[in-house]
Image 1 (spheres, rainbow, N blue to C red):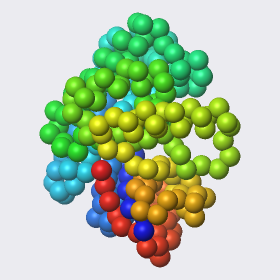
Image 2 (image 1 turned 90 degrees about the horizontal axis):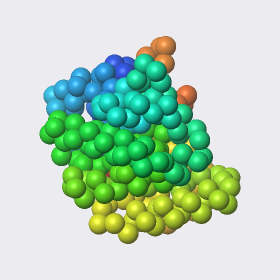
Image 3 (image 1 turned 30 degrees about the horizontal axis):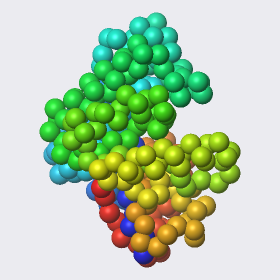
Image 4 (image 1 turned 60 degrees about the horizontal axis):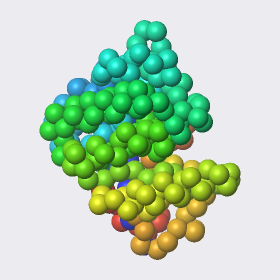
Amino acid sequence: MLKIIINADDLGISEDVNRAIEECFAERFITSTTLMVNMDYADEAVDMAVAAGWHERVGLHLNLTSGRPLTAGIRKFKLFCARDGSFNARFAKNTVSRLHLTKQELEAVREEAEAQIRKYISYGLPNKHLDSHHHVHTDASVWKAVEPLLEKYGMRSVRISRNMYGRVSLAKRVYKDRYNRRLMSLPIQTADYFGSFRDFMHCRTSLRDGALVEIMVHPMHDETGRLMDTGRPIEEEQDYLSRMKYVKDFY
């Protein structure tokens, strides 16, 4: 029997996403969520979580690609920020920068990551789980800055690199396997498998019995108010999962 975590990414990114995630908790569609502390609706999200009692299941969604950074240093680099100081996601679209940053860029990433971890902790959220927007923490260059902060701030779990997928290049597969082995060697908790609901459907028959599987969802409402996950009704995903033998879990 599989143990399944269903995590809602992007808490704090907008008012609608906050409401959608709140509804998912009320309906028991998800087990956890992760917060973008640099976004305009982060404070609202934390207030909602505390009021409704799911604040213990809120982790950190480290963000280096959307909104505005918390620190000034990273704004100096065109690789990370536009002229107005907001993140531009440029580095995340460049293979070279995803693998290597200059000493100055690396320090700026470390400062921003640390600021986001510190803000997350300042909310009093006890989960201390870390994942990231657009999976940037799995990029070698960002991971070099983030890894030392895990022990410093007592982070207890980290999302692995996506390892439920269809076709992927050999180079990407080797990189993901190497990253995951490194992460799993640390004294923190991880899932055994991670991917989207679509990835899970593709790989479900090959997953090891008893494994811990994390499925990421991105709750939002469509124009009719229906809960959606990246274009698919969340109810359809839940209907399928309800027919499986599994145990809901969380880090």
